[in-house]
Image (cartoon, rainbow, N blue to C red; front, side):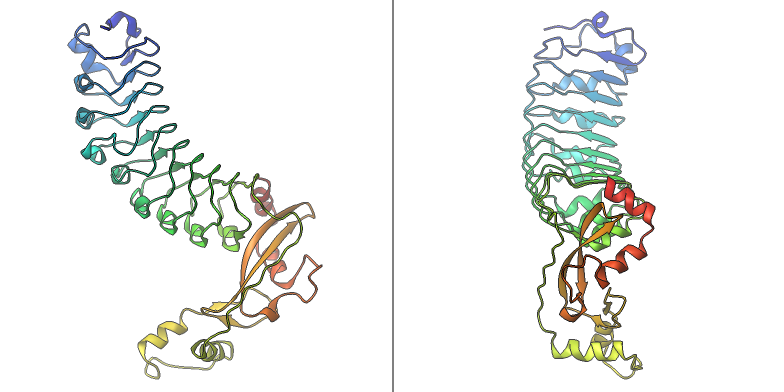
Length: 352
């Protein structure tokens, strides 16, 4: 079907060919000047099976919307659109094999491929150095690649409605990430490394398989919204303990650290000096102990005003550091968490 310039709206750098039942894009009737001046092109809600090569005539295009078509492939010509910043391709039939090989060389800032058939995040996506927003919700993703850390400009990552089972620690290496949406997946735990996401303001984890959160999550000082509904979080006070006895090396290291025995670089081999530097202080305020590899994995709830409770993962140096009275929700280790976090910030996190 040939389209006419008059059907595309009044101009101002915008061509709107949406909802025209198009199965191809013929641009012969569009003036060269209009093609050159077009910055936004809307081809959404048509019947395009592939992105036509005629797209290359719009050399100054900055936004392209090809959502809600029957797209199974994107042509190589899209790579030639050097000024394209926003690509919206929601609700098509695209997968990781639908993209041109050089797609990662584009200067995209916003990419939305939600509602497609991706089973993995294409490597071309994680090469988009200027990308600020990536949406891949409602696909068939099973994992997040470690290479996600290459998207150092990313501010929003939307991966809700997939089949993801784990969050890679490399995700914590995104310095500007402010909005992270991982709802409606199969995630069972949150890596403590996420505490390095100093810009994070919103974290959506609802409808997953979470039973606890790492206590480090309270260190996310800018976090304003934390969504946890629809997870198997325990509704009553629960604690679980697993403990592997410390090795002789760890016992020696604990003794040196907890008793403040002085030592100097000339006294010990380099690997032992490094080992001693890895000591973690027991979070129980009534315990002066430390641990290295052997610790008690302890789930507790931080209680705020007797109304909101957040399950956190604690790592204690020994079983003796847990409260002897299991019915008391204000144990030693737990009260340390509450006293170390400003009440107003804790409330915002728990109410999110």
